[in-house]
Image 1 (spheres, rainbow, N blue to C red):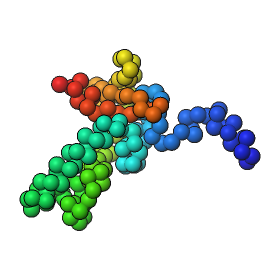
Image 2 (image 1 turned 90 degrees about the horizontal axis):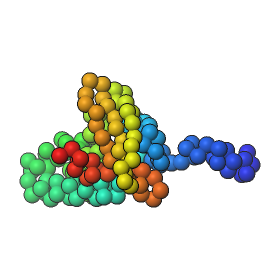
Image 3 (image 1 turned 45 degrees about the vertical axis):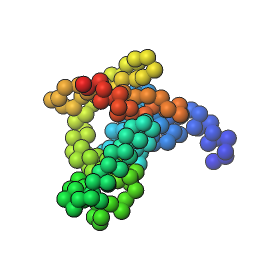
Length: 162
C-alpha cells in the first residue's frame, strides 16, 4: 500500500488509527477501557489515567514500600496483595503501582462484561462518564483532557463520591 493511501485510510478512520489509550469521547473512553480491562492490559489502563491519578498511585506505592521495608508482616501482606512472586521491596514505586493495578484488574475481569455505558455529560471542562453494572447503582467517572485525549481523574471521581 502506498503511503498516501495509508494516510487517507487513517484520515477516514481516525479512531482506528489512535493508540489503544487515546479517546476523545466518553463512549470511546469506556469502550477502550472496557477492552483493556477485559484483556488485563494494565499498560493501557495506566495510560488512560490522568497524570495526577498516576502520581497518587505512585505515592501510595512508595508508602507501602516503606512500610514493607520496616516490617516483615507488611512485606508479606504487600507480596500477597500485589501478586509479586519475589520480594516486593525490590520494585520501583511505579512498578508496584502497576502490579497492584494489575491485581485489581484481574479481580474485576469476571465482572467487566456486566458493566454498561449509560451516558456521558459535560460539566465545565470535565466529562462525566456514567456506567452501570447489572443489578448495581450507576457510577460516575470523571474524565479530564490531557494532551488532547481523555484520562480518568481518580481524585475528582473520589471527591464526587463523598
